[in-house]
Image 1 (cartoon, rainbow, N blue to C red):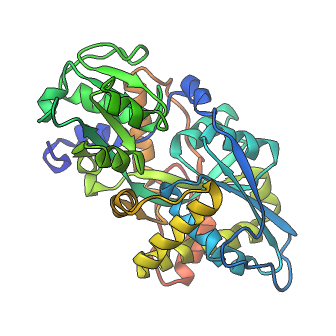
Image 2 (image 1 turned 120 degrees about the vertical axis):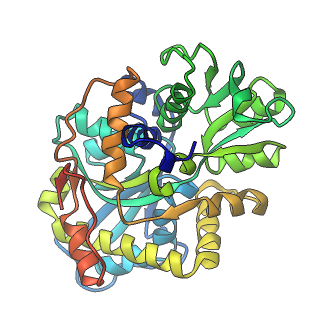
Length: 373
């Protein structure tokens, strides 16, 4: 049922579904490795030029993943470095949110592109002292892909085995919410019930799908498009469940300590992020190629066109953190029994972002009463 047809409360829960908030389970996300890309890793070989800001170096972190397109392109094209002038940009890539949050807390990185769940987890665990969300980055890019030989309609999901990346992660919570909206019952801890929710790493899911051990998956890009390339069918795009078809998949966060000490550097990185998103919007073909070149540089392998194209089209870069969806998803995770009600007041500081947007002649974005704006 489209979001527009639901009562307000139902739409709020639908919006909640796209963000992971299981505090205990989020630690299990951190099995990924990290890689130091070194100084000025961008493909354009941009180097620091001019006078340095208040810090000689700023260390950023992001995933070699298409949902982190802003960081991939902004780094690869040298757009962020240009805004930093003589302050050197250093980048480290991560495969999982908790490990990036650990690096932020340890002072190994200063600013990170990251999913909302690890950001919320880091904020709650530190009682609001470790980080702030300072901008949005991307929306969308999550789909329910199924084996069309076994599943031909949404009603057919009942009784089937459907993969999600891990217990309590963004897509897992989204799927549990969708199941509840159908009136079906699933134990959120075990994944057992009217639907079998199989928590499987995204790297393993395509093989599980091909072998038939799962009948489908609620997964982000590019895993969703990978499954389609293996014969899967998109049964539902999660954006259809959201008001205005928008939901946050990636935010920009900063160490609170670094923000306090070097607001000029944070502002420069944010300006680079905003201008990168504008460049992506104005040059979608070039931006897609740039992101894929960055992926190849970082991982050693570019995405094939049949996977890259649909994945790229399903993700929208955005400076707006879509804060209202964060509030909504928190309420949903609490209702699902995956999270104790968190205090998220102050998690956003959009002061610098709105300063930049004003200078660009654009309207301010909203923190949904969860912080400074």
